[in-house]
Amino acid sequence: MSRWQSRSGLTISAVMTLVCVAALGVTPAQAAKDQTSQRITVFASNPILGLIDSNEPGSSEGDIRTLSLTLSNVNGKKIGTANIIQTLVRAQVGNNVALKSWVLDLRGGTISGQGITKFTDMMDPLDRPIEGTDYVAVVGGTGKYRGISGEADVIIRPGFKSKWIISYTK
View 1 (cartoon, rainbow, N blue to C red):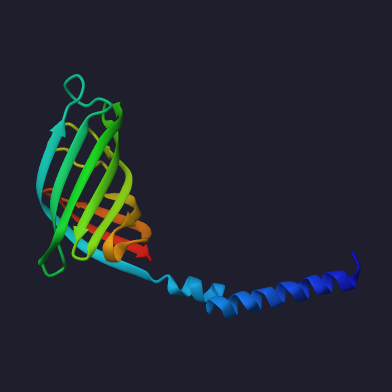
View 2 (cartoon, one colour):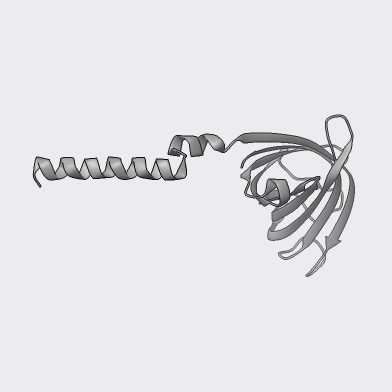
């Protein structure tokens, strides 16, 4: 390839890029900048717990644990609900692993997430996750949260209470 051919190729590429930027009105750097990072902190309380023991008594694969919680802001004002479904995927004595799916129903839309939670005995209604914080992927939303992605740190507190720190981009 001659120098002229590679320079003309570069020139054509530069011109095409300028035409695309002019047509769209947005540079790649601006598009990345338009994705704003946001954070929501909510507090969960007032649990309603459900247990579905699908096989033999005690924890076994396929067992389901549901949890419905009231969500409040830092001032204690109710702002929505959390509905969680945990399905046991590995039942080992003292180390139950569950797939956790949740939906936060907030004013203006919903936020959904998915992750893994470990229990000592998931079918024990008093058992809490082994680790002090669950790290969960934010996988989508509706309404004003449509198109979001990110992560949530769910800090486990006594009495089936928790603090949710949701960091996302839109």
